[in-house]
Length: 125
Image (cartoon, rainbow, N blue to C red; front, side, top):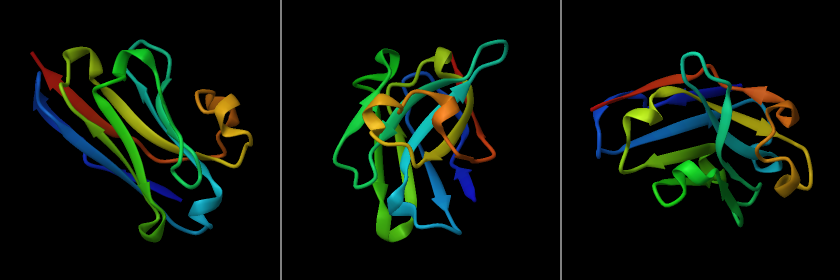
């Protein structure tokens, strides 16, 4: 089970940090991803992180602004979002995958086994 927290309303240029708490399974065995879905658009993966946190991946539109991290001792993955833009407005989901190698699957929603419920991020202009 995954529970995403931390969404809200923020002005453009501001920051938010999302967190996703995992329970019920061995968290450190799963690569983790953050996805988002804006109204009328397809779900896209914005960031991924390997099981031990040694490698991270980002889609081009968030590179340099978003940072994914994890704390396996706390069963939690984070998404720090800086310099937010109105186009970042979306429902954000965390997801877990056991697929390896993670680098070949991190952005593919069909490779993720477990999903959180989503948290809404709204960036006002």
